[in-house]
Amino acid sequence: MDFSWITDDPILFGSLAFVVGLFVLAFIRLKHGQAKAFEQLRQQNRSLDKELQKANKQLLEVRSVVVGLGQRASEQQDIIKHLNERITELEQTDNDGRLYSRASKMVQLGADLNELIEECELPKAEAELMMSLQKKITGKEKIPPLESNPDNQKSLARQRRVRR
Picture 1 (cartoon, helix red, strand yellow):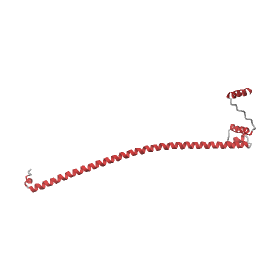
Picture 2 (picture 1 turned 120 degrees about the vertical axis):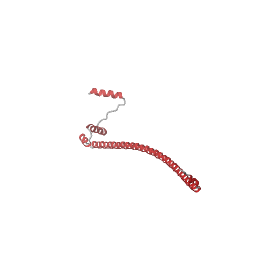
Picture 3 (picture 1 turned 60 degrees about the vertical axis):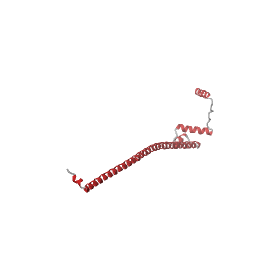
Picture 4 (picture 1 turned 120 degrees about the horizontal axis):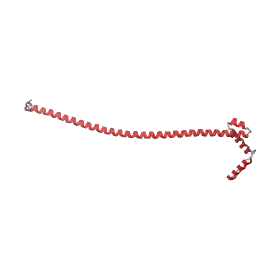
């Protein structure tokens, strides 16, 4: 191929050189624009990575707080359960106290053993004890003397067994 016709005409050659120069300039600008856009995308990507890492750290902190709160809630539930059991126990104890107060009052008013057992739902031994205590309080029954020396108490117990 013969390109001499292009070089022979200076206007055509200049025009062609100008067009090629424009294409080269446009290509350089395009390449520069792409490099600039690529750099912006890299910076944006780095920024998003940093935000993601920060969000992950916050998520881990929130998880640990939630676990801690869960444990505290469990401990509080255990405490509440224990307190409810204790309240029930105290209510039951109070009911027993009222029962014994009623039994004591009935003995003072002259109730017999069977009335105590039926009305206050006391076992026979407890009803007998209530009656005996009331008699001792009113002076109808003697209270045995207390010994402070344990050896004397043992010897007295032996003497009582021997007498029987």
